[in-house]
Length: 239
Image (cartoon, rainbow, N blue to C red; front, side, top):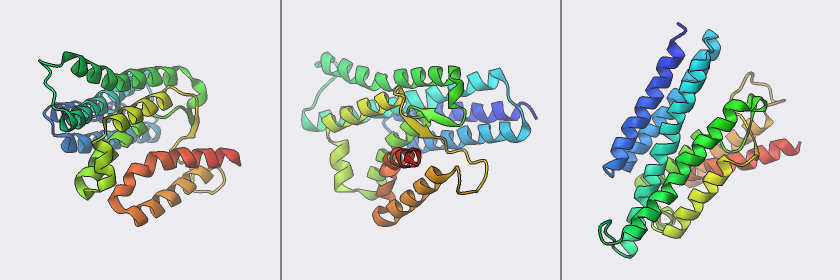
């Protein structure tokens, strides 16, 4: 029984690895769904560890290694693909004829897994983040990236498509996400120990805001989940 959480963590890693393969082939929609699957496994491994009381130093390190792959490397590769497509649509480039631009895109995309790894290293050593976070969790970073891909593919929203077609906005959002991961901005954890209102104010605020968001904007509203998470955290900390 004690190996069940590590097995689920391995499924997280497996999903992230396959997502990288699909992203490298240009199939970023399938890659995004696989990253979402990795998020579910990431949630379940922690839940199973708590239920089974199967905590271990190996499990903690394995979880971080899996998260770097699934929520750092895979989203970074998606960002690289989106940037390449956006720049190509404005001014066609070829990696053989314009090496400088190609290298620049790689470096920008690489910031994401690097900051994600730094964020996880800090988290593993910071005992104050057991019930709340300082900085954007790396799975939330991945959700921010894949929400754009999924919303763009399934809604065909002109606003979202203009965002994914803008190299400037893609670079800016990438830098913001990376800075948020290594920042010390306080954010609440989504782990709920009970259903009482007291102590869960931010979580209930987030649930309400996301529900309203999805009712108004439909599937395109998933792109606002992470901003709403940050806003909910700020509101809950104000009380």
